[in-house]
Image (cartoon, rainbow, N blue to C red):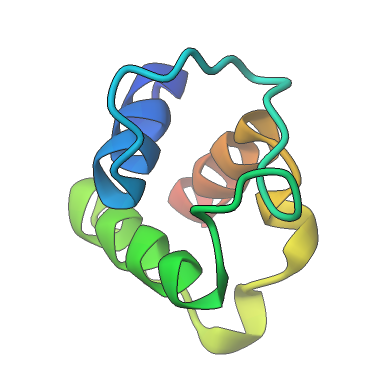
Length: 81
């Protein structure tokens, strides 16, 4: 199962956030200027590579990028498929 810390690390490195403090409730899309539509693609690619999952275009929804926790749940669900 994916660890929340791994998702946070991927977000930080992909978006160049440095040591920004994040937890499961940290808002993402619409609240984090670094996370624009192009950055979403980069985050998805990094998650696919790290966790060995495949994310189809139809699987990508804004609700998955609402918070760090919702992104973590999305990865967890993809791994369970």
